Length: 580
Image 1 (cartoon, rainbow, N blue to C red):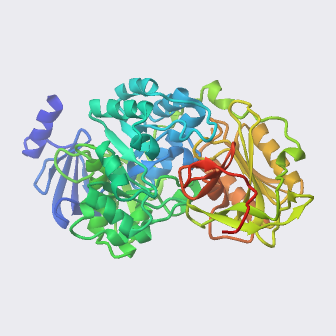
Image 2: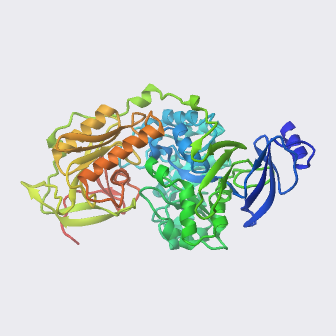
Image 3: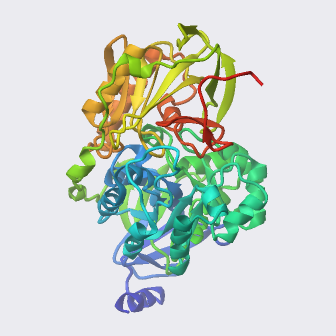
């Protein structure tokens, strides 16, 4: 009551504000205008916009634009490979002060302990990390993950102040067939009046109605403008995604116009740290949208107010009295160079440097999360693919997409064993179960990775995060898997028996314990090593690799149980009978 009364007094000019900003061009995301006037802030909240106010402190904006800061509507922090506090640092530098994250990745490895770690690590920092609870752990029954989460496991987490709802429901067959366990998770969210996120890859027509009937009202899997419009007509919020592997903004943005823009928002989903550092986060998507013809104020609205309204974040996403004082200052609305970032009315970044950031809040990971890679003793024989003939079912990569093609083609063999071919760009791929020591090793053939020598390996492998190894030689693949085991997770590049680069990710095999600067330095070495063994530069091999075990994204994937046809939802042999 005291704070509200003070805010009213500041708005009425009876008491001084903590801060008054003068000479700013204010981005009004409600009216679509640029307006002028003073802005008053009290206790981290905008108390007044456009009037005359008393002030304890005055900031001269020098005719800069004052815009709401940005909100990422759907992101997996784990894909940045740093902890929430390090993730927050780099996001703040790019004008992002809030995210809606899904700890689905760490939950698939470490279950409830993984979720709790992320929640604890996101507290007491000048950054709003909101959480949606993972709905599908494991994502499917066609692979081995590290944990299983029931509705009963999730229910206590709803009491946490950072939890908003149920994260992306990717098990469409489970919704369609009203799977009892999944229905309990969905009805719990409804009972608690929480948001439910969707994952409608490839769904059309009444399949979307099935999701809407279940109360699933968002989707971030659109790849075309037509898909976006179909979801819009069904009443969904459409999340426009531009990550590191999945890049759909330029196509999906074609669906946006002045009549429907309020139902679109921006998300990064999975974005590598080095891309955030060099290009940005949601600020990068705003710039791209403007380049594609979207009005700058509309693009900012999509990146702020739309996201806030989609997730029921009252008092967020706008420059208006009663709203949180989260904003940026910029000289140019088209190029969006960020001069300063304010969180709750306090400057947290200026001229590309963090200020007022509490570095002492770093939370150590529990020991249980640091011992998650349990590989069997591997031999060269474990990597052999025996074929019945020259034809094979092959996973063909689509660059900068997490969708793959099912290719049936002739491959090289020796004594009925597959032989990788750099010339044909047909390489060997292995998924090695790392959670329960089952000994499972799924083997397949991949086209389009463009490695010319050596091998790469990673424990970042959506969604179950088993060890993935791809390469041109069995010896290098074996070495790469050994390095991964010794690091207890991470990324590595090897060639001719030598380790060219590696990045340790010991927290559940997904996150580093280092700073974002340290992680970025090692990523640069990884990228340099990739150039030594690969001729391609137009997509990220590691991020591409990490989605090749995700059996809910068309058309064909590889799990620890073997090759998987997403369209028929069943495993199949690597050997193929015909090219038809």
